[in-house]
Amino acid sequence: MNNVAVIGLGIMGLPMAINLVKAGHNVVGFNRSSARIDELVAAGGRGAASIPDAVRDANVVITMLPDSPDVEDVVSGPDGVFAHTPAGAYWIDASTIRPDVAVRLAGAARDAGLKPVDAPVSGGEAGAIEGTLSIMVGGEFADVEAIRGVLDAMGSTVVHVGPAGSGQTVKAANQLIVAGTIQLVAEALVFLEAHSVDTEASVKVLAGGLAGNRILDRKAAGMVARTFEPGFRVDLHHKDLGIVTAAARAAGVAIPLGSMVAQLMGTLRAEGHGSLDHSALLLLVEQMSGRSHA
Ligand code: NAD
Image (cartoon, rainbow, N blue to C red; front, side, top):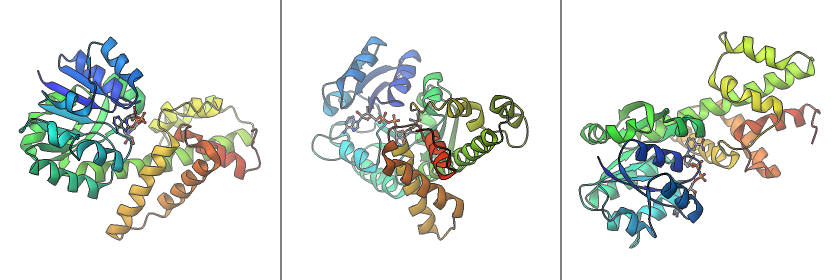
C-alpha cells in the first residue's frame, strides 16, 4: 500500500481520493478550500494544512487541479510539491493541462528526483465516484507499471499511451470528441422538440443505433429537462478547447468542427454560463433557433 497525497479535492479529486482510501492506501489530502478536506477526513483520509505537510511522507503525489497555471503554481517554488516530496516518489498529474506544459513540468520533476506520470482522466464525476475512469497515461513504462495499482483504484480503463505529455495529447483528442458530440446531441434534441417528437422515445432508439454514444446515455435526459448542474463546467471545457486548438495548430492539423464548437463554448461562457455543465451548449442552439425559454 502507498502513502498517497492528493492535492485538489474538487468535483473529481475528492471521489478519486476516496476510492484510494477504499483500496487501502494511506491518503492525505490538501485543497484550497477546507470543506472538501473535511469530506476526505470523514471518508477515512487525513487532512493536510499545506502542500509541504501533504507530501512530506508521500511515495505517490497526485495533483487534480483546474488548469496549467494551477499545476505549475502547486508543484513549483519553495512551498511546492517538488521542493518537499521525498526523492524517488511518483508524481501523477491527473489534471487536464497543455501537453507542452506537461512535458516541461515532467523534466522539472525529474530534476527534483521525482518520477513524473501524466494521467488525465475521462468519465466525469460519475466515473470518478464509481472508480471507472478512463485514464490516459504518459510517462516511462517502468514508472507507469510501478503505480498501476494506484491508477487501477481510480479507473477501469488505464492505458499507457507513450512518453511524458502523451496522456495530455490523448486527453485533448478526447475533449474534441466530447465537445463535438455534445453539440450534435444538443442540435438533435432541439430539432426533435421543434418537430414535437417524443424526445425520451427518440433518445432510446437513437442510443441503440449507429448514433449511440455516451453523451446520449449520460447527458441527454438532463439536457431535455434543462438541468445543467455540473458535472463538467463550461469554464473547464473552454480551457480544454483552447488546448486542442493550440495543439492542432502546432501540428498543422485542421479541426473545422472543433474550431466551431470551441467558438460556441466560448460564447456560452461569455454569456455568463461558465459554471453550468458543458451540456448547456443546448441553450445556445435554442437561442440561435429562436426557441429560448430563458
Ligand atoms: P474543480 O474546480 O471542481 O476542482 C479543482 C480543485 O482544486 C478545487 O477544489 C480547488 O479548490 C482546488 N485548487 C485549485 N487551486 C489550488 C491550489 N493552488 N492549491 C490547492 N487546491 C487548489 O475541478 P474538477 O472538475 O475536479 O477538475 C479538475 C481537473 O480534472 C481539470 O483539469 C478538469 O479539466 C479535469 N477533468 C474534470 C472532469 C469533470 O467532469 N469535472 C472530467 C475529467 C477531467
